Length: 221
Image (cartoon, rainbow, N blue to C red):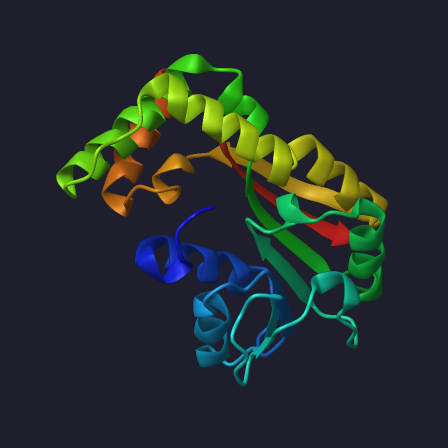
């Protein structure tokens, strides 16, 4: 899916600032799908009691190599998930885990993308392909033709990625009430670089691209 969080230092800082702004000083934070642990480590450096869970991660002082659905601990002040909830196989088990790991008043922050929104707007999909193809050529590779790229991408999405509507349903089943939800740039974060982000944001603002990114905040009832 997207490249490691540590490859995007500005985006990393953005995510850490967002979590910090919604969490009491020194509060307990859980990251679902912590990947390379960059966000977990940055939050720990700021003084938060933070733990990441990721079944494919190398364990360290702040990361547990375990599935989110089977992880158990005292409820957290804040639960954060970036590009991980769309992979969950059992929506009911995920909702139950979120209920178990939060309490009334806990904050849940989710950064996702909406594959359906991308797939339904050919100009956005084609722009993304052009950016990725240019990067591949610059690195000495040979990009796939647009039609082959789209066919492979759609097959992969259908096999492995829930659309945002399914993730949102799971959040509601977890007894979470949305407090803020917004759309924005995301494609820069998916096989591209942070240099592309301002371009993507300008095109979204002008109506040339659809905003694929989702940033959702909720509170446990």
